[in-house]
Length: 154
Image 1 (cartoon, rainbow, N blue to C red):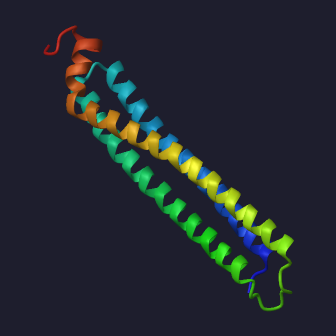
Image 2 (image 1 turned 135 degrees about the vertical axis):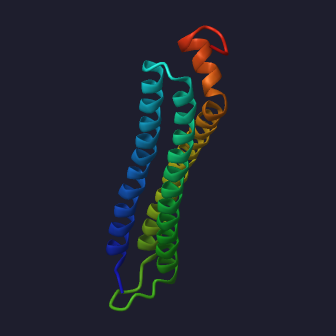
Image 3 (image 1 turned 90 degrees about the horizontal axis):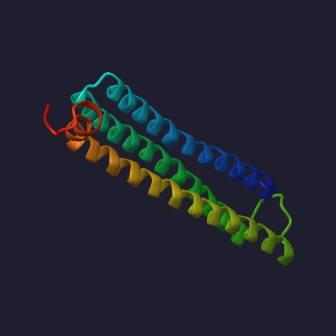
């Protein structure tokens, strides 16, 4: 059985992976923006609209990855919480009240931080997905009007 120090090390490693999940979302958004920018440079309204479909797909995949990492992290946090509350570790002496409070406080802080970060990532995901979907649907009209010929149809 693992000790509480081992469990805390595992939780911190998960937190690092969970933080890296944000970079997956940012990478997907960056690819979408670069492809959209390229479509504007080459003056292709159709390609600009299709870039919205690419962006929506990439962001949805990134969202699935971040949700999976978050779920794994939260499951491990709950397992750690159960172990702290049970305090039935083979080879580990019973926890004093101060030690138990320390471990519970650490787990509570990690869960709160995870929740704050996941809310921000989810809001970003939803906003980017909505924007990319609108680009996919109406991107050719917007590109024609703003970037290419000054009207909705060229």
